[in-house]
Amino acid sequence: MLASSFNNLDDSPDRFMVAVNRMKKSELIKQVAALRGVEPGAVADQVDQVVNEILRTLRRGQPAHLPGLGTIRPEKGNPGRRWVFRPESHER
Image (cartoon, rainbow, N blue to C red; front, side, top):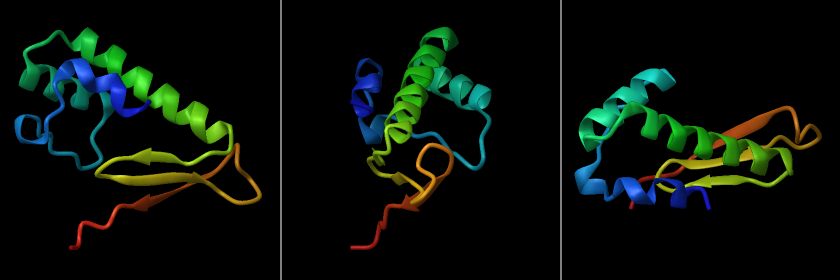
């Protein structure tokens, strides 16, 4: 469900690259909008949908899998308050 939110932005990896290093949400939105040639408001709506779905998943006590990035899991004993990010290994 999470990945489907960006389907209409054509999320093929070779056509969509954003450098992320502790980037603010507004900067991510500007970069994606510029790369895609779409309005920042449309990108902001998509980003909000993804973030909200991640939060809903975590609050239900389930892990949120982010393909190509890793997994965010609820912390044991405190599932609604704290989460742990496990980066995906890119070693082959």
